[in-house]
Length: 280
Length: 256
Image (cartoon, rainbow over all chains, first blue to last red; front, side, top):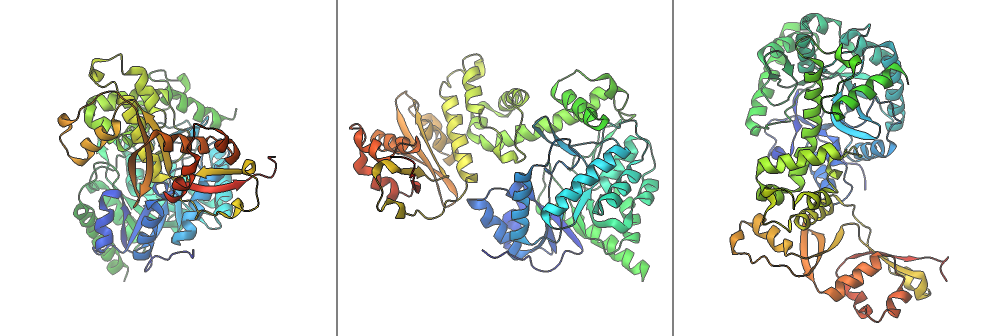
């Protein structure tokens, strides 16, 4: 079967496609220019899943977002999993494929969570090497996302320095999650704007926006809320530097009606428009 | 072990090990969080993802037990059973056996002696949904081959179960909005075949004869062995094929 092609290009503000919104988004486009597919939900090769993929790819420009590559892990890369991702990519022709700067597996156990790495030179070399392997396997440049972290090793690099070093070493692109970066900086008592200034913005291929949960003493990257005001403020800074970067609204828990996500997307679009006008 | 591998080992052990936190990790939490709190964040998230996956796989079990009891049971299972595949849709096999081990021990399960069988049926329906498609059946290998060289293999999207309770009816009543109290739940014996129809799992009660024939094929019996067993209704092999339950006719030349 020939590969399918999403309509249009990935630009402007898209949303992370989640199951409760699937039929609504298939019935009408709602002004959503593109969607980000959580590729791990589409690994099945039979039944309804391939048909769903066809419907999405026929209607939307899309990207593939992964959570299972285990890029930072110490165990060999799972070629079976990567083969599944490659097959989805061949079918849907995504604009790009992304995963996270973390590890997700240890001693054969999958944690289904994004576990942090020490910001060390060893980590940089290790994950960059694996990113290069994945890029070779997929035959495309990978986009990697910064993650939230609640434990930090005693390591010489800052988060931004770590991210920059990995992107340089692996020659990959960056999915800048503004919310994750904000959560980390606040939890560490650091200034998020300073951290943003250190991120290699020339590597940014996509921006994520999501909501955190305020636990009082700390923030959790729960993806269960609207984007917070401080994160919008940080996003304005990013938008001024990257007015044409595609942005994705992510919402993974306590998923609200689609209209709420569309509302968030419209707000992000307005900020991008302001940034474009400011640049002009 | 490299420092990076050690870090991963320590963190994974802390997540798995409940309250035991490695000393090296204790100095590494962010200011607003103790190391124990930080590990608890990861523990909850990791376990929560798997509990949520079980909730999706076992909706009738969850409905019967109530959210709190189901989540408690699922957390126990998750703590004892790690996920061995990156695809979370593949997690939860074994929950039936786990339920069987606890069903006689707690009040919440009183009156539900069939819960393990119901859970097995729900897993079958779930796995059918995600099973591979099979190519069209090719009967070519049947030509010019000895029966002892021929094997019929069921399609990927097929499960066959024997139950001692009418769990198919219990599941249907709870899913279809019927009045479950109208069900007569008495022990007996049922032969079930679960297949995919229109992308959904379809549960059918079949006669024992057909079920045994299907099971014997799946066990890898060649056609000669099937024919030699007088207790099997081999004249119904065509029915298995007509129903679309057979995925392949395999010819093995190494078998005489």
